[in-house]
Length: 217
Ligand SMILES: C[S@@+](CC[C@H](N)C(=O)[O-])C[C@H]1O[C@@H](n2cnc3c(N)ncnc32)[C@H](O)[C@@H]1O
Image 1 (cartoon, rainbow, N blue to C red):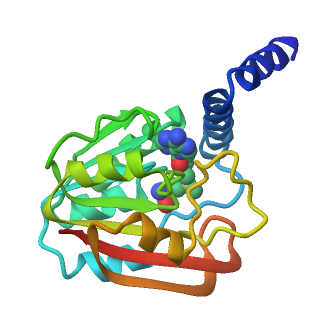
Image 2 (image 1 turned 90 degrees about the horizontal axis):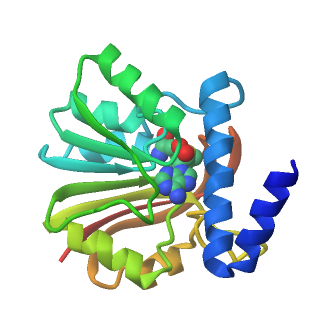
């Protein structure tokens, strides 16, 4: 407990980077618990927007950012995609490997934080950001994603709409408004961008969910 307090104080003392690191570690611990104890609510069926969209895309290389227990990565691998997925949670990595084995598919699985992952250059035909806590308001991050996509590559995003009262101090929660997404993705062709009150798969409550399909120009 004392050690935890000291670590938190040190992180806060380090400024925004320290805050961000603390936030990431909190999420890591939270999701490790969720996946390991198999309690609480989390979805196991693939995301509906992904299923609807992927059926019209030719399989290629896909990156699933913050893949969770791999529901979407496994879905794509089953459809012939060559999938890499990563997540900050050790338990997510473990569960994805199990789920891939059960489904009889191969997925490259990495334990890594979204801010440190090596996205590469012209590597992916599709990047999934599904309830992924990534900072799309950060131009540097978007430019890394963009650079890692092949020309004509797809970006598929779905998450909760950021509420006015959500803090801006820790911009790694991954919630954005449609306007924020439009502003962040100026160098993409936006094919679909919509928002509707519907089921938040991760809380089983009704919330404003935004869905986006964009293509690298
Ligand atoms: C709401 S879940 C979504 C999982 C998956 N995309 C899905 O929809 O099934 C958020 C995931 O983000 C992961 N995560 C949180 N912070 C992260 C970070 N900084 N880098 C990578 N993964 C992170 C968590 O471990 C968790 O698995």
